Length: 270
Length: 240
Image 1 (cartoon, rainbow over the protein chains, first blue to last red):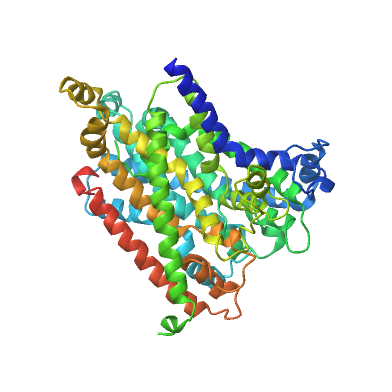
Image 2 (image 1 turned 30 degrees about the vertical axis):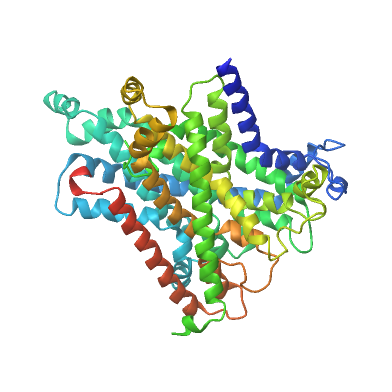
């Protein structure tokens, strides 16, 4: 009986949490004429799934999607390539400045690009990198690196040293041990770090808003806001585009959810 | 110090304090309840966890736009629901009325902060061994007594982590205030972060130098929070 009550309360709670996004989904299905009805209706009178196809066929949307994909994938690749050796080395070796290094990594995680965006703008302006992929890729990679190092370090540290020693006894070199033994064992960690870096870059807004002023170089987060401005109000297109952007990251997020807390709190909670 | 001469500064600083303090406080209270709830065994618990993920994973700018639509004076579902239920006698212009803008932004701020906070507190609750509760029961402690003397002290590290990280995240938060306050002229409802951005890129000032000066103040504020955080989690070399 108690379990049933709890289950009922749980489903109610879940509904409350997703209810704003249900409004988003239902509005995305409405024809333009139904957006401005008083009183507002929750459900569309006429369901128009074509809104999603229209958005997907919109050349502007395709451009934003391309920018988002390029930036998110490239910055994720950069994060993984840089974080794996950094995390492995700090997990396995004690060296001078190791604590300082980890401290610095922790501090960069606390700084959202928001507080630094004016400086970033000046920097990329001087480098003549405004409106380039490089600017967004580098910034996203830099800000997502800290989390990746922390979460990977925990994974590497959890692999018993004995396994590596056994590999060395069997004649494996350092690199061979890393590639053949350690990386496959820490694959969940690498996947988690990569997914997190991808989502963070995918959702990034303020740096893109500042550095990407050319409409052809805007990512999704910035681009879709042009569906609703002072002059045009395509709320259905805005929300159809938002649903398309949100669903994949929610699925990715669900895959790594249980590892995220450890990474985001930098191991301060076991 | 031209920064100190800016008329809007006292308002902006006050807004920032209210924004951070109220969002973090309400988030912690609700998350504590949510975490306790999710720590219980019941069928369908995974569904609740998945639902909780959505506001966390979704882009903040998209969530903010969504709430602009929900809060809409004429066509928003919020006014319609509240008026139909008899809570309000007439619709409210949530994002246009000086009296309600901050409250409306805070509600969204809390909504998007709940998932991370709940997850951290849940992780904290799960570190408390069941034997401790058994011992409390054997000693005849009541439910409330157990909560006060066992759960709260053992949850303290998780609470500290959740508090300080939230202070940093909410202080840094840009898209919510930027989007929901978009209609209002001036700096009456800006935080230090959106104010800094507006000085450099949007206002008639277009003053990168002034904005950078405020940026330095912002960075110092975050550094202070980081320092408190490190003290709170007792970050030490041997633990690294």
